[in-house]
Length: 283
Image 1 (tube, one colour):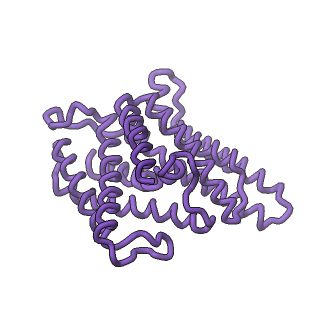
Image 2 (cartoon, rainbow, N blue to C red; image 1 turned 180 degrees about the vertical axis):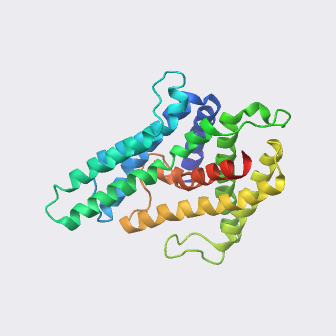
Image 3 (cartoon, rainbow, N blue to C red; image 1 turned 90 degrees about the vertical axis):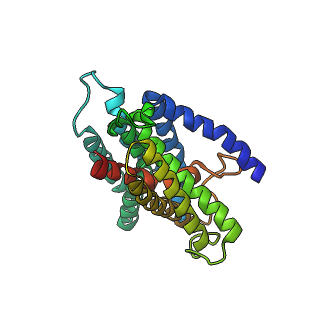
């Protein structure tokens, strides 16, 4: 299992680094593909949990949200940008899902189908904030040590690196020192010691990156703790969905790691939190 995880990571990490480094249409395309793959897994889990849905409509809605987030990069200067277009297309999709739900003979099933489809779509669509970070993140100070990253890459790097740091710290500390369970009814393997280790490593990573960005390291430490909480919440939310479905992993796409949703569950919650931080405290 560990060899499989290492082999898969050796393939996945360079792909993630390349997508972030190239940015623009490459990053948007990668996020869109991830959203589609994760949507398939989400709606499969929801079905196994006993919640009916329209997977194709839900997946399409998630994709629309991601493409709308990418539109400033993809359509810049084309004159085709529509202000509020994503909200409009999302509203149309919700209406179409509602119309489809009306075909269910049992109104309770129809309501469940409508609610589940919209939930699944917007749950996955949270990943669109990765693209938003690349498109709307503020510029770094020209004298910052890591100014060469540019705004298009810096904030995505901050978010991904902090989440990875939290996951790594939580795993290593929990495996070595974990004794007291944390959220055992959702994820039996998690421990309070692992959670603390994740917070410490995430805070350190975020603090160092803030120094590289020419920002306050104290703010970075606080950001790391908040991001750790967001990453852990994202992981637990997916675990709750898997336990409801009676599944160990969201899929078998990545040997040793499970499905795509298993790889991005923390990112789904961490990306909008990073966007909020950038908008509220950095701009």
